[in-house]
Amino acid sequence: MASKFYITTPIYYANAKPHIGNTYTTVAADVLARYHRLLKDKTFFLTGTDEHGIKVETAAKKQGKDPQKFCDEKADCFKNAWDSLNISYDAFIRTSDPKHVKAVQKALDYLYKKGFIYKGAYEGLYCSGCEQYKTESDLIDGKCPDHQKKPEKMKEESYLFKLSAFEKELIKKIEKDEFKIEPKERKNEVLGFLKKGLQDISISRQKVKWGIPLPFDKNLTAYVWVDALLNYLTGIKWKGDSKKFPELWPADVHLMSKDILRIHATIWPALLMALDIPLPKKLFIHGYFTIDGQKMSKSIGNVIWPEELVNKFGVDASRYLLLSACPFGRDGDISWNKLIEKYNSDLANGIGNLTSRVLTMAEKKLSGKINVISKDKPKSLDKLLDNYDRLFNNLQFEEIIKGLMDICLELDRKIDQEEIYRMEKDEFSKNIYYFVETLRIWAWLAKPFMPGASDKILKQLGDSGKEFKKAIKWGGIKKGNKVKKEKLLFPRIT
Ligand code: MSP
Figure 1 (cartoon, rainbow, N blue to C red):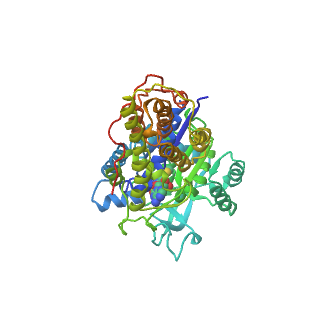
Figure 2 (cartoon, rainbow, N blue to C red):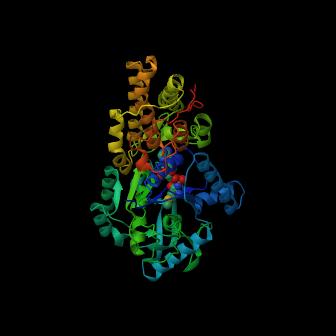
Figure 3 (cartoon, rainbow, N blue to C red):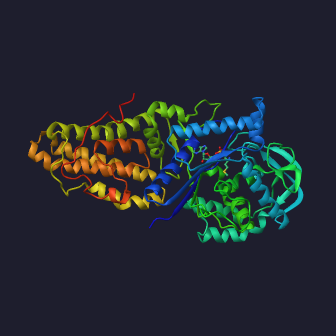
């Protein structure tokens, strides 16, 4: 039965343009959203930009730009990148949007009046890269391990949020999977952290001007993470009220990497509990990419940009290559060489060549006309069909991709072993259905990953189906249907 599916990516800092890391998360979210749309679920996919705070303020200042104008430019960079990758987001939230600002102020006002926010002083070590206070135990050689710089000592008159009040309830909800954190290692990591105890946190900033003014003390701005987390609600038109939330809420999956897990597993659910709003159903934490074994960094000069990927491989292949790079949820390493190798083996020599091979034979021997229906089908196809939904529910993209490739291998093997290309017309007629019909279902199953390539394959096979569940049933190509070969899908790359 169709249901609703609300998925989010982190909102990315608007201090720079998107790189392959942000692209990875966004493509994964898009693939999931497209899968749920195929199931006819009421799907909503939210992404956007995190625009306030010291990090963005400093980046704008460096370029001598007004922060709003700077963010406008950066938000456009993200939108352009996502368009170039065929990302089908339903809304793009920007935290400088006045509607978001108003809702955040309303929520903060409520929390203050309810006593969840109180005045005090806060002292700590602040990493502007993470936009977070750090404890000594978070640091390695006195430096933030993610940003390789020493955090700054900060002491401010501050408003604090009673994070500690939610510790016990939160542990209970995570243990019972009412608030799921996946993969399991991440859940254990969070529970370990929570059991050490939660401290109240500062939610105001005295020195940061580029932020949302606190409704109860306009000289201070809101801590950027509080502002940012609430995007998951304002992005679906929440107005800042406690207890009231949009129909799409709770989020079904918040997708992110491990760098921002802790905040999403502590401050975010605590804010929601204080606002009397249900928690998201699941946080899914994917791995981190390194490039050629090194952390990706502008100073090393090894950053891969999405436009470079699209220029080299095209939209569909870029999406495919990202999600096949490593098991989702584990760290992975990529390099241009590995990407090229994978492109050639799976796409150029794999599905691209297979489609062309099958259709060339069908045109040559039967002028493309399919005359005989057969029930015989590859084992690898049944295997993927049996597991497809489960793999999507577990976000095992790489396993689905492996299943798709196994089908190509089985088909190629059969062509060679049975020398299908040598068969006479009559015998060939009886055998070709197995291939064209498998390719048709293959294209439907690959649709969330490679929507463009999938449509091109389906067009060549004369499939104009609309219903996914019907379309993946054997027998879609009817007697008399014509298939027609078109341009090579994935030309070889060197
Ligand atoms: N603005 C915050 C998020 C606020 S959400 C309420 C932020 N932004 S970010 O631009 O730094 O994006 C972090 C996210 O980008 C990671 O959690 C992950 O989704 C993605 N990635 C950034 N670098 C990455 C890799 N090297 N590898 C994989 N994903 C990466 O944090």
